[in-house]
Image 1: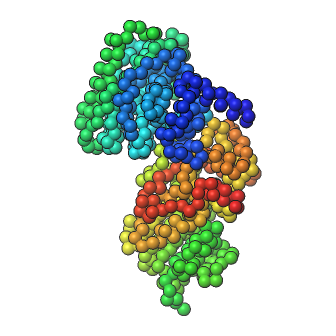
Image 2: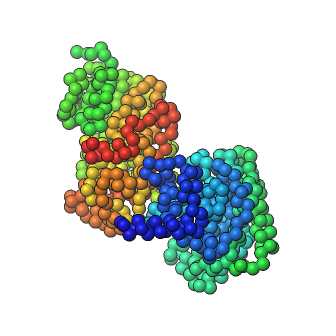
Image 3: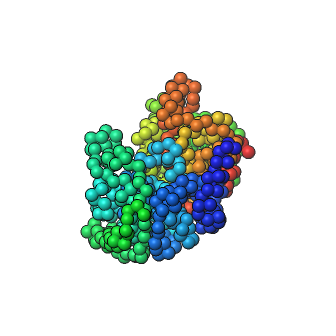
Length: 281
Length: 310
């Protein structure tokens, strides 16, 4: 027990030294105090501070993330809609660290996880403590009503598992986020992540193997398993867009609004790609 | 023979929760209990009929007294009981109660169901509303009759608008004298937890649960409600509060072991109960809170510590 506490303390110290000394107070000041240190959804500021060190290290030293436009994210409820790629969801982790370590005031973003994650030991608990919830519309609605920031990847699995030759081509967007945005009157901030799409270039998808293992895809990358390469990440946050309309409208009507978001992300991606000189620096 | 004062019939009055309800209610209303068990420590002004809910004799209670309300908690959940007995007692008993409510024109019926009818599951939303499907039996078949009781009452609510029917689905009821699965589990010295799982849980003190039954008696209350206690807390924090030292078991091993142990009567929990300490089964109590101004009296700390008999 003693050893565990000491490890936790040094992990937290590491996080603070990489970010800012007053991160803990700043983070706590944004959230309601709780009797047992855990909010009603299971989020624990302590666990976040203890566990985020390695991810902050990746953010600072491995992917050397550059962010732009963080000040555009409004306070209160907001949906962050981003492109998704890279075989492993490091893009989500990097957006989360940007919001915690660099945004002012810091925001703990919640993201929606697949329904099988709660069946995994350790991962299920860790994810709940750092603020993730199972991706049901009810959970999303409730968190927005609590004025939280939620990260959504409307490309879903098709995005994260895209092949290398499809990089920066947005896959089909789901409509669910738009329905929720209209219902809860939540502004949408388009987010473009550049760099993740090259971190684990997949050249082939071994479908039979994916089927046997129950994975959505089984990508073959230069490192065989998708170990991410140290590409340079560039994350930009766009102007918030507020949509109006009926949440129960026809899909075609919602699709029109979704296309606005998709176009915003696509143009941010293109601008960013044009501006960058190299993939790795 | 007939008594002029209108009475409240309480089924299952001899249980811990039933006795608590009687204690809180008997000064405000004339209470008549029905339970096949004797009523130990019965207050003098409470009349008790020691009969099985399924029996004809139940009618006599209604013929003798002008019944204005029924609090139905004569529902049992004992995994050791034969499935047939269990089912018969719960379903036929409840049907009998509903029949009497209709036949004797009872104006109010409060039925105690449970938030466990939704069932713990990995794909549950964190907070289930009253509209969520009752899925408990899909993984735990012996929950079927509790779901049926809930649905019988729910059906009655629609078919008999002349009776104000309230179905309450409180979260895990715990208390010093209660001997249900959650209270027994929390009283263990070396309880099992599943390695790598620490779900959020909701608990309510038995006295708060009893108070919610009485709240349901108030005129105008009608409908199906989740009832939440002082909030949500990780299971590990509950044990820390109790000073217990849980054993972390890998869930696959735990399931196998408990299956065998339960079969040979070395454990009192069926293996399906493990779902409750692995996955979420939490409810949203907003409807009850906004419509009745519900506030539990016991804090989370006091609720948790109540299982120790403090």
